[in-house]
Length: 360
Ligand code: PLP
Ligand code: COI
Image 1 (spheres, rainbow, N blue to C red):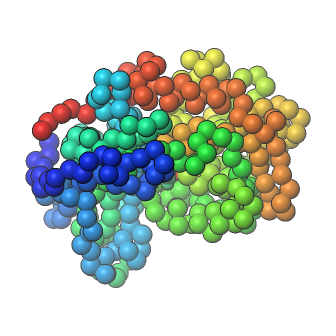
Image 2 (cartoon, rainbow, N blue to C red):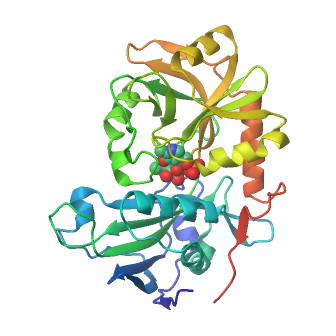
Image 3 (cartoon, rainbow, N blue to C red):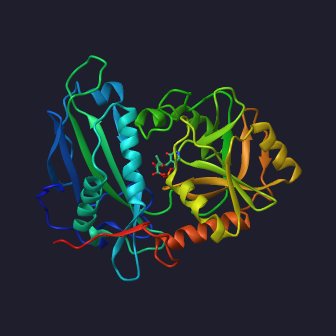
């Protein structure tokens, strides 16, 4: 159990910074942040303080060699006016898996939950009262040792910030285009593609710029041999067959184990679908779209939720349209059930939602 010190500032009025028009994704911040430091093999100095700049030595390991990890999870306000985090234990577990991949210290699941819930509790009044709103919560950890040798840091900071957010894609639930390219790859076997660490996102930027030049929102990466479908830059991938089967690439060391995908797999029977995780060969996938076997496709992620893909574009500019290019009925059903569970309008499986207790 953490002993958290509080340094609070007078809370802004919600109306001062949250309006339907300005919400966006990841732009706003609540008033406070959680911080905790690691040195001499221990986590200490847990505190909630006003949102502010961090103090960091210019030689901090994370700035030079990318020793950092993060999570992204959401909290929702229900009809009872209480706030609930969604699958926080799964995110905390993955945070520790990422820590292991980057040679960083772990934080117990209970302490991560306490840190996050305590911060949400303090800033609960800033929850935006608009449709599709959430608290997008960003816990992260970075090496702080002032040392230019390439080795794991011996000191770290863990921080949590909250962004009151709306849809990740400005148009909300609307078919997007993805670029399938042979030019760039996101992750290699034996690397850290399945960890949530900044380097994987840095590695996706050039490809994302290329995608944007084709009007695509993200890249759908293949394996390094351009043979199998892996995932997109900020979401997992799925497709649906004419037999109502949802197919998601098997999690490997080059694919992030998505909490959203895992949830959709667990919800398959409520969707009236079968579900399978397997290796998906790009040429078979393309053939499947062309011959009508693949009827729908999309992305899955905390920020992206369930995002229908209407079109794939290739390096030569050729486009491939999935079905009629619109969001399909199963994708819509996935989105509706998943979001209804998050906001408490459909029954959540045991343990998926945790109520943020009121402490102060
Ligand atoms: N893959 C990548 C690379 C991501 O950044 C994300 C987003 O977190 C996902 C997949 C989806 O994971 P989750 O559903 O746990 O958010
Ligand atoms: C998320 O969905 O939580 C992500 O981390 C994706 C992106 C915003 C980096």
